[in-house]
Length: 332
Image (cartoon, rainbow, N blue to C red; front, side, top):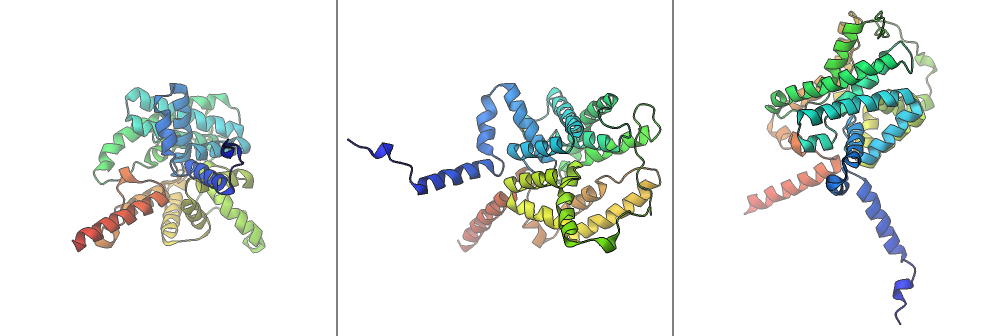
């Protein structure tokens, strides 16, 4: 008799299984995406929503989205509720309008609605569990889908992503319309230009600086504590270790792009602060868009078409294959 089938799994086999499972959970999880195509709509919607959450920070991974959602619930259940409601409003609006199914299933029509909802909650001076706020959250989330649909054909001419232009536009209009004394939707005023900061830089220590680097990643989702910020950083690492390193570098080190963004942010803050409005993420959006418009032979070689952008690891792999194919063609 053959007892080979009953022998314990070899260490090498277990290691291979673990590595395979880990690789299955990283990147864009295309196998799961394909597997969900013929499933019931509620199950598909769960995947779309989780991908939409992760798209806020340029990810496309449902497990990363689940980690980020857990971070939001840990930070503030009220903020998590607002974010989910804004995301669902924008996603369902995209479905009703008949937007491209692949874009909807990848969460590309949900993250702007989530950002609008989160910022509405942050700037609201009515406190948590103020149910009137659910109305502008739903309307604002839906409005981002209309703006995204309108901007896409224009930006496609230059192969530029819609990015967070809809979010920045909607949140700016909302805050400008409601102001600080609205009886139903009062908001905190934006910090006026030149206002002194409360931080005493002479008392900063290395642990505080390291904590600030992690918090910088979490603040994308309006998280101001270390625990949720670490979960968000873990979500980024799950999708792409390279992107996680760049997130930390962007949070802690003033690289050239970060310096451009910082100066732009200061200028926009001073400009909009006169009107009592925040600069939001206009600086990063405009800086990123301008950098994508840069031309030149050396830059063109590394420019990835918007529709083919994947995880940094996958982009590097594709670029190596493209370079090798071009080299072989040249040799021939």
